[in-house]
Figure (cartoon, helix red, strand yellow):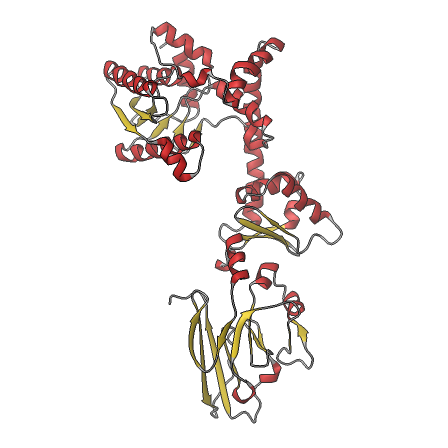
Length: 461
């Protein structure tokens, strides 16, 4: 076991990457990094398979790389799994870059292969210099802590045993073993930003400090440790205040404003909590600024590609934009007479009239109401609330704005937006659905007939 193999072995053991009775897949491209990874793990005594992907992106080079991997594995006695991809068609179909298409295809294949052969891990050949390039690349993109932190040694069953050594270490190892490898000609070009960093920026930094690579890699590791501590802080906030599932199956995620604003860095905490919903940078700054304003930003709305965020009294509310768009498109539904109706997805309403009996008791259920049938004029209309809607809540003498009533009931913005009402022929609200009926249809001692209205939502039709 030589020096490099010893370093890698210690790194693997330290990060719990090796089960002595386990088997592992090595992602083998034929390049120096993956060839070194294959030989090091084999020499350490790990049970390994190799997997090669031919993306058919570089013509004869792609075929050359595959044949090299076949010959290498045959010589070393390692089982090689191969697959071919039409990467360009995949990229066009899924509207992603060629680089992203290749990545998706590669990792999907590795995951399936790992299941098929019951492998314990998938080993990829990222090394220390990749950390340096990634940090510099993400600095240029304005990334947060997540982008600046070092690449993780383990991510699920993806293992990176070579993060402890440099590209030069790898080349020296292969030279010592007399092992050749293939070179991807696109890595020598300056078309990609990463290649420009590799070929020009890092060498320039090394003229300022010969230890630039090692120092930047060390900074990335420190940033990763800091990120892990920050993640613990964010997880503590989530554990206290962010439900793992939307409340009441309403698809609304809520985040307490107070816990965010009391954090040492509200911007960071908020980014960690809502970044996955597409809210970043200036948007997060705007949300924090609004929450700090005199009115607390209540009612203000921000949109990402797929989600909408609203500042409520005590919480931030996040809901899929598609749901709010569907609400805005929802049309009123006319109920001309008594009977059963199905509409608006899986909403059902049943309306029936019956004589009042001596043992009659008014309904107290939120989804079913009983009214004085003679005071209700058809057709009825089922619709969303509108600005300026008023009604006379049961038991009150005067009318009240629906918006004020819902505010008093501490209903949040999303709940107000999705609130439905039932109106009579004159357009008067007879039921603020799920909340309260109108006083003008109340049952009195002289009421001879009862009108019962029952609502079922999100039920199977």
